[in-house]
Image (tube, rainbow, N blue to C red; front, side, top):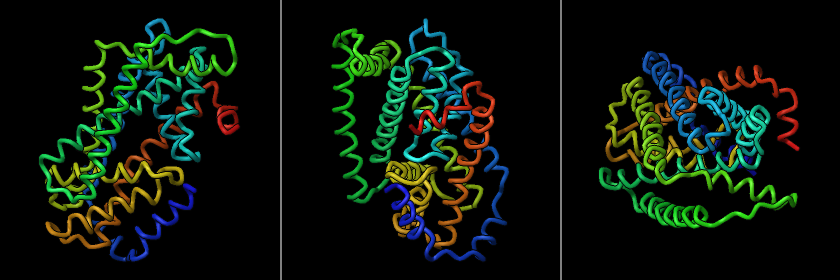
Length: 307
């Protein structure tokens, strides 16, 4: 299904693609800004590693550098495996290295993604005040706010409830999974949100840097809208690496949503989408592949995850 959606997304993003115009546009890009964006996006992974460490117990003994490597391995897995199995891949390898339960590690990863969602919602709320949005985009944001509020209430209820220890196979897996949520300490919440906002601010800055490399002249608010909407499209099931859905999302924003303020051509929009996707995809995949190959548990990791 994800592959089919990606094929549709690729068609809508590139059916009117002009290769000659793409080459001309790419030649004029200031690649020093793209390179800076690559450095920044890797630094954001370090912030993610710091945040992830706070989701473990102190006696788990996990180190920030190890989590940095496994974050990148996760991105590598998401870019080459179906169903975004990179999350399971990093849970498997980290669990092996530190002798931790895989469901327990995966529970911390799910909590990580929840923090990302809440940070994105906060940026979306900020966008409501600084940008004239269409009713469709506003409805998505308001829906996200409501769902996020329900999610936060659920997490607080889960935090307060006692999880019964059990030796039963399936129940033990469930108990270990929710233990990752139980590790969330109230005094760490402000720092976790701060790290999340810093991380997403880097993504925002990167979008603005790359549009500057193209000489587009977008405002910071334009870049934030592009980030929010393209991330919404990335949440749609797709082929590995969010190929197609991401590109269509960027094209939709630049050609349709920006039509009253700018006159971006289809070629400019698709060229920008390609570079905006490629700078992160290549950075994550290369470094993640290197760390995966160096991992002592890489040999059977993918086959175990795909079972």
